[in-house]
Length: 304
Image (cartoon, rainbow, N blue to C red; front, side):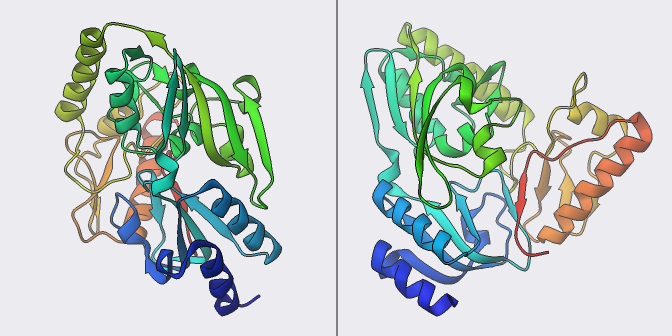
């Protein structure tokens, strides 16, 4: 199926206003970098998502699912195929006692604040993570000693052909910055979370503490994809990079942050190629200095 036919069929499902052709991906990532996607479709219902995935699966069209684009670097040549962006209708949250059901598109910051308002503890660590619940579950996001696996009871998923499955915590295969969703390309639709009752003042104090630490230590005002590298076992990536003398090291418009060496940031002019070359240079220098191989935490997609 050619792109014109695929475009028309996607429009029938999602509505023409929600489908974009040759859409610059820099408009959909926190790095503000990325070439055009052949087709980008904004999805706001579970049924539309399922139908789009069935369609692209039958058409054998390469499909990428994105949320807030906060852990994503898109290459300069862009993305061939279809990008499905989880949108508005995927933000619903319902609470029953200490049990929470939340859809994949809700921002972690918003979800954490809803938990605060309802006196539920367990997601304080996620209040400053800039992504959506779906992306956070796929990568088992974490900070300050907490991870998504700590609060998840069950996850509802789709494969890239639109088939649904429900997995409990154990079968999600959560690991450090990984899950079965990331490994097998499954799409998070919604999740059932289990939290604990706590005093609102205690929850708020913890969230404020974490926020203060982030503001003090991380380059939040610069375009980036968050923490660039996973933590190597027994080490801290930022410390290894700093000790290799790489703070402030730059290639083109991409630079290792002087504030936190674990972040590669853009000065507003960086290309994806700049960022990728810088990442590779950092990995090479750290290995030469420490004998430790760094692995990217940022997800890199697009045509090479």
